[in-house]
Amino acid sequence: MSSWKKITFKCRVILRNAYANHKNITGIYTLSLTFSPLKQANKDDTAWFHAVYDEAFPDFEQRTRKGRDYILRHAAHYQALIILDGNTRVGILGGWSLQAGFYIEHFAVDRHLRGRQLGRQAMEAIVARYGKVILEIDPPVDHVSQRRLAFYQACGFVSNPYPHRHPNYKPQYAPHSLVVLSHPETLSPQAYQAFAIMLNTDVMAEEGL
Image (cartoon, rainbow, N blue to C red):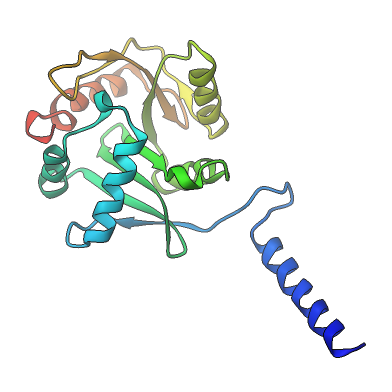
């Protein structure tokens, strides 16, 4: 075998191995995702977290920047995490450790990285990390909201039957109806009530909005 053929063969083997290491048998990219606590002293991470947050969520679902800074400093049960693939920032997670489970308030993948199964893998990593998980989605009344429900169902979430309204983040908006999803099973009436009370008091405390 000539030297250039050897080099070509070696390159193909390296590429094939790199490709295989990032795919499973179904052809979906598999990544090793980790979670890094957001530290306000890290200006780059903080700016990136806010940029993803601001782009991913409509204004009526957002805390003000002042409110975000407050809960980062003072809310003992709040966690702001950056989701990493190796050293690459791929998403954000903001949530609360409550008695009923870990409540995901905000979860988003960087818009430049969407369509690569990162959301699914990140959610699988989240439920593996926390076990009992609670989140809210829009009622599944159109194609987009139905797809969102299907996404979470595929991750093991189930819908809860309780009528639910999320308090408003800003005075110009009204509370809005949402569906509560939980993993790995539905919440008991007592667990839902405990969640609703914590949501309306600790999570949505005025100083953090």
